[in-house]
Length: 174
Image (cartoon, rainbow, N blue to C red; front, side):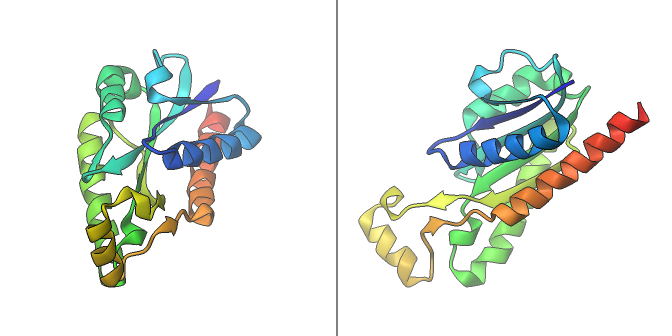
């Protein structure tokens, strides 16, 4: 059966994470579609779904939330994982670990209220100085904030491998 990796991306970082997840899944599982949530009409033809969104203002992007609402009943019949791409690793060092934990807990709770999830992970994305007004950029750097590509591809691959292993186990038990 076909698997779906769907995403909502504001500036491209989340799309690239989704493409990495889909490519890795395709090598191990075969047919995987990777599409924007806005391009997915129905999830009824998919065995399992991985859905991700960029985080803006501590929440998923509206198209991703609409995707969950619109497809909620069908998603409830499938194995679903979620990932979020935010800026926890960009925060000043004293706030990184706590910020990531708060974000993980809050988003997992909100998302699982909409769809039963097999798992959820928060990853850091790409955070550019140009995304922030100049005065705030100066204060952010002064406080120890970081800009750049903060994606941890090793962690993303490991999480994807966990999903693959579970899907292979489910397929072999059928």
